[in-house]
Length: 194
Image 1 (cartoon, rainbow, N blue to C red):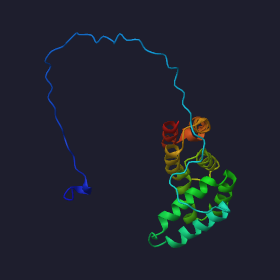
Image 2 (image 1 turned 90 degrees about the vertical axis):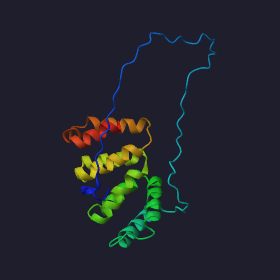
Image 3 (image 1 turned 45 degrees about the vertical axis):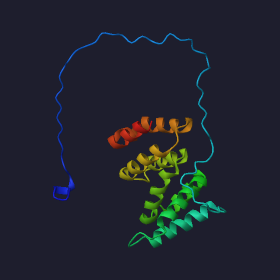
């Protein structure tokens, strides 16, 4: 509501319950013959995560990532450019194709430039692969990412990554790392991700 301070409203609900009776009738299970059908077996797909998808030709992923980053930084200074969402989706898709070493090389090239740094730290969690969690973990432990940046990026990364053995092992190393345990917010994010 607009007439409330800061647009917030409070609501209170009350309920009155009256005890009527209790029934001691036990529910009997159905006496039927069940056919043994084996146990459940889950099979997880290993193909590349492709949501969101933008059909594009990928020739040199690292060069295309740099080109899109430069475009995003140059065209989104005063206001958001109309093609920024499309370019951001392309950036995410290119980062999914890029290797861990390529992402590290791009980070090394742009980590000192705040505008580029922001776009990279916004896009990496959206990759949705263990590479994103590993990248963020290593950059935080190396001191290249602040606590606030790490909290924001890790929160998104652990929610968007697919749960597989590699991801669970990465999350476990995050949970038990002494530097993560010193910071309550990061510890909570790591625990929830694990």
